[in-house]
Image (cartoon, rainbow, N blue to C red):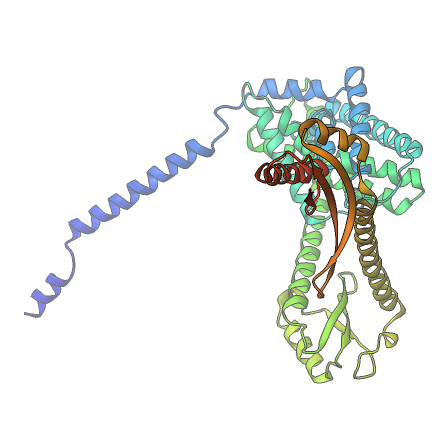
Length: 477
């Protein structure tokens, strides 16, 4: 009985083998589908790609003029903070050739192409910065716009854009018969053109920090775009350049490998540091919005300093007890990215949270905000007062030519004998209104019903003609 129970509870070996076979078949089908979907090696034209990239490296003639004009357009877009104009400039700019050439030449051990790429890259950067410098030097508008300020320091998003833009570009260029101009432009706009224009802006206004920050951002983006080209070229098995001298080939391979290592190691370190900074700032912002809260107190301003691992909060209103602040610090320590950070809470010494007890920076910020808000309120009230005064003037003096209006009425209403106009002041003892009133005297032989109908028609017509919401037409015998 016991053996029979065991036999009945387990499926026979044939069924297990069938289920395993089905699962294996499904998995193989999935692998075949993914391979057909994502594999690009079969449709890669290596020789044409290499020729195309080498052709785009050269920077003279038409390419130079196109670059100058596109930099002008991009500078104007940054100057007026217009993303659409920057996008228009990116689609015509030939910036990517030398950078892609650097990545490809390192991947295929082509020293001659590498030298040519570096030389043309220097020409490209110099021409772009000079063009932007000239524009911002002569431009009457030199205000710092959000589009310009955003290009003065690198973030993890800029690196990711450079990586994926570079990957999309080189993958598109390797496809047989592809048209990569649009992807070309997207990678240029997001990674290369705005930083170069900002370098020229920083030099034009004498702000070295802006120029160096933008140049640093451009360098990072160029490195990662070249690195993306290098990786894809290696993965797709681009053929190495053949040299007649085996020693030269070996030395070239060593040089290319050294350059690749020099580029890759700092790039990885930079990527990790920017990623940590971004995570720190994101987690700090979430912590401030979700945890740092106290009834009766309000956060005025907060600063997040990644270098010093410090989060500073300025608060006003009810005094936050020290025990609550210590609880916040304990909760902040539970967040992995904020373990080493220090929370500093700035607040007034008095229970009322006197503004004067806060730092001068915060106090000036509060006063500035109050001034701006009050100024906006005053301007809105002034605009409403001006509008009401104009409307009142319209009612009092008549925003029309009475002579012309009387001629139109006489032409349309032949039974009118006399016409007068005045602003009548009326009241229901709750409020006083001023109503434009037309007094019409009709000819004696006009029947009463016709007078009433004509007066009603005249009132509707005058409402439209004078664009008034309220007016009155009074008939007189």
